[in-house]
Amino acid sequence: MLRNYLTLIVLIPMVVTILNIIFPKILKKIFTLLGSFATLYFSIKIFSAQNLNFSLLGNEILQVDTLSKFILLFINILSFIILIYSLKNVKPDFESKFFLLFPITIAFCNGVTVSANTLTFIIFWGLSGLAIYLFGLLKGKPAAESSRKAFIVIGASDVLLIVGLLLLATSTNIFSGNIFAINVSLVGNGIISYIAFFCLLLAAFAKAGAFPMHTWVPDFAKDAPIESVAFLPAALDKLLGIYLLARIMMNFFKIPFFVNGIVMALGAITIIVAVMMALVQHDLRRLLGYLTVSSAGYMVLGLATGNSVGIAGGLFYMLNSAICMSCLFMAYGNVEKRTGIADLDKLGGLARRMPLTFIAALIGALSISGIPPFNGFFSKWMVYQGVLQTASEQNHIWQIVINTCLLLAVFGSALTLASFMKFIHSIFLGKLPKKLENTKEITFNNWFATMLLSLLCVIFGLFAFAIPVKMFILPILGPTTTLSNILLGFYSSTTIIFLFIVSIILGLIVYLIFKKIRFDDEYVGAKPTTEANRITGVDFYNDIKEMRPFKQIYALAEKKYFDIYNLGAKFSLWFGDIFHRLHTGLLHTYAIWTLAGLVIITLILISAL
Image 1 (cartoon, rainbow, N blue to C red):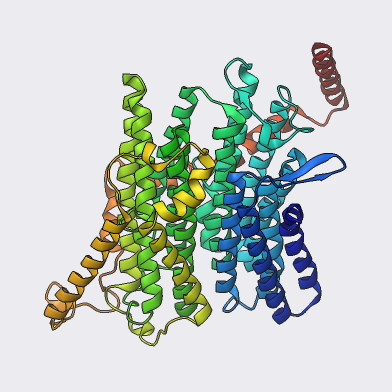
Image 2 (image 1 turned 60 degrees about the vertical axis):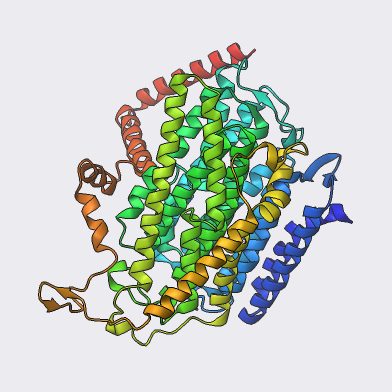
């Protein structure tokens, strides 16, 4: 019966989708909720089971190991929480379509994690990418361009995935064998194996939103429904992208260190480039989109270290980022649903009007910024230890490169905190605009789901050893890996909890002593501020855009000189123009090109024989 669970977690949401085509909206919600609960239940059963597989016609189609069970479990946990958030206040314009897409997307994502057959994996991977495009189109024309961009970038990466797997097929029988058994050494297999590696790497980067395949994420975050953003780039796509990256770095290939070093450098670049872009954003959605990209850099950096503590930190940070960023998008969604505003300059002072949303957003922001005792701190600490351990084992040149990556990561963490202070201050602190004075807290399902994710941030921080690391991460690294032999320094959950409680008590004491504080108006010069010139949380960060050399870099970024989608479009037009010039429309010209093509194909076939 347990083997059938592998099929049920794919089939149940598919059946729900079929039912949702037929039945009215209220039943769509009920069926989706029941189906999501069922897949969550079965994912828990699968996580606790051993040696599960499913074969069809003599071929092993579905299988799980410790890594896929971990990803599968949290795909369904996060999906269920985001579904609770989406049960009410999804815009009526696309609510019916949303609940049609939601369960089928869960089916596709579950299918990726349990696929043991290469063709099955490719199919589910491609369908999960198509879901991004369809979710983006829910808002119609306003999101059409960003949805198309996401579709093209991810579609191109799907082509790279297929090319990479086809190239692997030249050295291992992956299409008739088990994808979990792929193990190819880059050393000694020629340039083909390296091309395959980097093709698969870029496919994983596109899904996870890492540099240079990241540019679709901020645009999608800006234009798509907030529920879709919390569901896909913030959570499920992050899990799937890092799942493939972990397979590449840990299972598919035996990698020489210089390749690890290149991947570590890409991780560090992802961190710093994205957080620098986040600092200057005025649109809340794009700010969070860039910070989602930046968080992927820590995962890439950790997995590329190649040692147990770094890999554990990268996987743990993947989980923490999915929780935190979904929480933050949902918290902002609460604000957007109540105010209809995305511009940071036009918000402020909502902490008293929306206290539960404020608490959830504050916890999520502190968590992803790596502030103890929340979950982001411990996972970043593990990544840093992994980087230091890798540096200690290399020569002086590589030590300089790796320590530079570490410095960029630490600096990026500080800038992440600065970005989130901008986020928190601009929305919840400062002066409340008059037009927002009647704003109220969001409905139960919205704040409950957001608070539930923030609670996970606290629990996974205070009990990092006992729950997430011990239960979910260490089994992936093997039975011989323990915390005592991979971690340095001192980290006690009891001590952290004690200090956490003491800090709260001291804060309350200070508040009770000084609570009779005189509040006054803001002044510019000698005059009180007005709505037109009030101080917002954005103003301080505007100067960054004017600093040298950032001014020139930001100017180039605004012109999309670093956007792989824009660069690809320009290259395609240039390449197409060449063929347009070569094909003049004359019959004899076409005959010459046809003959040349036949000669090239003949030579390729002869060399292959």
